[in-house]
Length: 364
Image (spheres, rainbow, N blue to C red):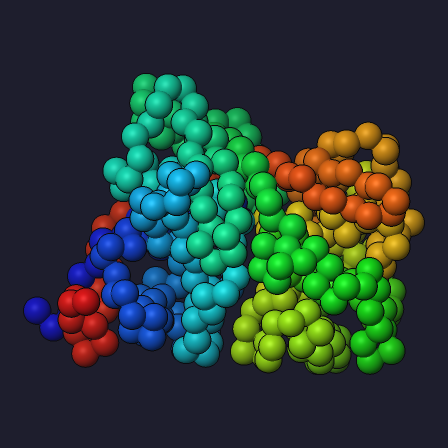
């Protein structure tokens, strides 16, 4: 056989999709693994015409699952962001949308047994060390994808998957505020560098001459904005202790603006070289935390109750996303305890993807 077969599930998780692999079926060596994922996805072409990617950063994501040896977790979730047009794989970040389907995929793969009407699965996000409890609907002891829950950016309805993120403050950099400041000035512009589930650089939309409600298409066509944003992001990455981030998708970048409704804030999230069509699950927690923290660039943009937990509604290009944040504020210091979200997932296909044997012959 001139190609190497690899079994996979093709899943939609939240508003992203991609292949889900059993990690045991992939090469161990990191560079070889990257080559295999590039070949499987078809990275290096805008349409991913020679692979199963979808020509967009939200459709070239990969999940690799295994039973966890962690004392707390049931499942280890290892994530890879495969580039669309450049043959590059970033193993630094994690993805909360893809995480949505990790629980269902783990059951489908036989890595965990369903238990009762709802199965609680403890997941360790290997890339960042974050801990998440996923509640998967399993009536009759099998995963169900049918239900009445909907999320903006995805057509139709499906069964809910509840996610509860714990211990995510500083999960990538080791600090809630990696620079030690609530506001930093980079290239004359005020930003907040924050790490909650995803390290991010956050700025006011108005400081870029934007209003914060622009469409994805409007933002993607504004290359002057992207050039300025990328310069700031790279400098922020250095300040955050992340080194040279010019070839990494982290830290991510976001812009925010006031919204008319209580508990709402306008947001736009970048991946980072184009605009996310909706909102990242991980990034949503960071943006919500920034909106709740006194003294950040978001201070005063959002009105909400002082009781915790509180629901923060993020307005994105295709609708809204609600984030339930449990936190405390003492002497102006924000402490993130946990965040909860409800998403949906669906199994789209399962089978075998093939990569040339010249790339990998199946041996470890």
